[in-house]
Length: 161
Image (cartoon, rainbow, N blue to C red; front, side):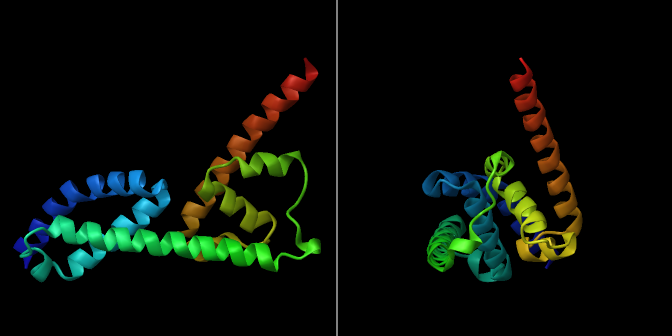
């Protein structure tokens, strides 16, 4: 069993970075690439006795990852479409310059800020919604606030001049 784990760890350390890079280029999304690559590697690990004996374990894993990425992108598209259809006039996004700056944040930071301040969720609830640890939520919010503070300071300095 230990040999199988070591064999998988070596294979994983070589295959995973290439898989993420390939998926990012194929689908244009680093988040989707990481999620799909991780899912495919977990499936490979669960079946390592069989997968390791295949002619191309990497090929099998790429196929699983590509399918996972396609599913994620289809789901995102469907969710966005349903959200657009269900939004009522009184549910419009907050207006104002600050929300324009929030819209420019990296996706994880933007989601955390919106869930905290629009959704009024607590950090533990945000973590559950985003599938990350509460500590990661805290660090993500802190990074977002720092970035917003810098951007707001730069804007205010530009107005004074």
